[in-house]
Length: 295
Ligand code: NAP
Image (cartoon, rainbow, N blue to C red; front, side, top):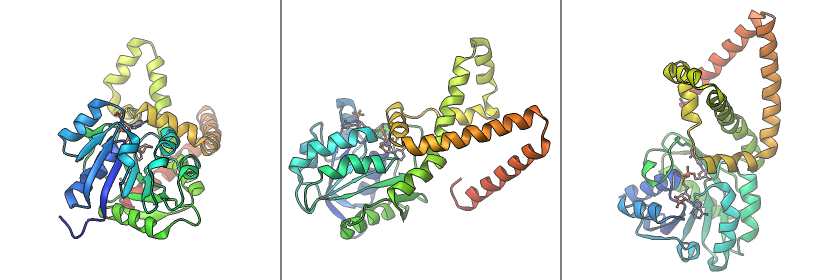
């Protein structure tokens, strides 16, 4: 236990990888007096209880949100608007609603209009994760040394923003603040585009005739293995990310296709310098990632 808890009751709507990891931090450090977990399935709720992640579990969104000091939306982003609409009638001034969605503009547009007067919505995104889902896949060090990006709209309740920031600092993250629009552009490039490319490469292999596919799997350590890790992520989550970060994704895909055509040309015409230059620049970027502690 550390000093005084930051919150009385914290309610998690969605208790998968991200929700359960944060719940573990809250439990470990005594950051709340009580944790409530809400999910769709009995199996998830039973698992959450078995793992000791919550004091109370329910499938009822309103029951979960009612009276909680902090409500954390940890479901696929496409569900956030309907969940906000459902819990809105039981929300009271002073409660804080936050989220962890990987896209911010779409979540703000879907959730904010439902927030009653006096209820703060603090949008956020922990830039941390694995390819696993569900309450059993979480761990309390997931956010350590990672970034938590907050995108509070203009005029947000600064006290609520600071409380949410403090929770993520206690989870070991560095808290950054930026506009939701900027977040969505940056993440389209650093996370959403690489993941889409991984799905695409793995899909290409899946379409190969079965003998060739077996060869690829057998020799996968030469690069394909890392792509499969990235491509093994939750379909609901990633469908929602691509569809809800549409503009930024389309822009990044346009740039990517142009660069890919340039590479195709370099290979066709034997432009060794162009290829070498790209490989060198890529190695520099890798070194920068390692230096920034993000490897
Ligand atoms: P997850 O492990 O698949 O967990 C999702 C949870 O949401 C489950 O408990 C699920 O319950 C629940 N859920 C889904 N739809 C619901 C609904 N309509 N009502 C109530 N509960 C519902 O997902 P996750 O990886 O934790 O991701 C959750 C959020 O975190 C997403 O918005 C994602 O963008 C964001 N995020 C993910 C990562 C990552 O690497 N995974 C990183 C940063 C941010 P059931 O099990 O009962 O279906």
